[in-house]
Image (cartoon, rainbow, N blue to C red):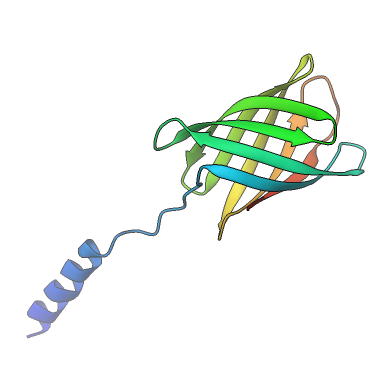
Length: 119
């Protein structure tokens, strides 16, 4: 009986799908801090290009930047161009449409923070 019960429990474990983090296409509210600690806000729009890749556009204050992005497990990363510099942001997918991250830009010291929340 123990072997049957163990086999049944193992079988159930194989049937239950693993909880995968996802990022949905759409518009997100942006709240962040600049390299100097000042706050900024705006929107970001994500368009999926495959199951794991996307394009992203941020509109914050008077600035627009575009990039490519990728989801890997619970990490969501984007490379982007801001004026004449290249930037990188890495978010942790928190679920419920929330991504929390840190970013940097080439030629600058330090990092900023950013949270995206699905609208």
